[in-house]
Image 1 (cartoon, one colour):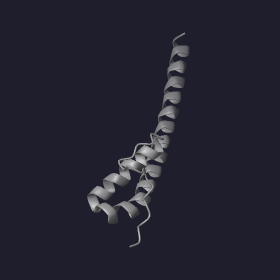
Image 2 (spheres, helix red, strand yellow):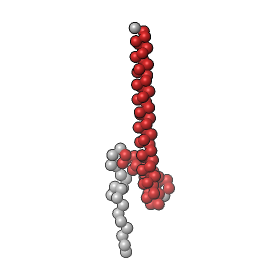
Image 3 (tube, helix red, strand yellow):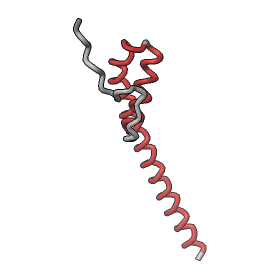
Image 4 (cartoon, one colour):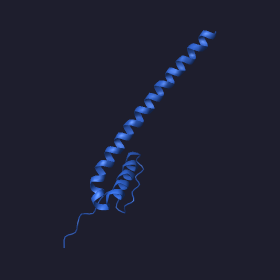
Length: 86
């Protein structure tokens, strides 16, 4: 009976270890996606808002887009109006 109990604990620890490995993998993939998206958005936002504000806007919108929240701090969303010609 004691042997069976130890075997169950080992199986649970193995399953917990696999679960933690899966969670770490998911978090790593999410981090890579958010950072890559923020880098792409910063190409547009840094020239428009400056370094720190541009990085903040890029990170905020990257996280918002990944989570499908749809939040934007801009009145037109991420669509920038085309420049007007005088």
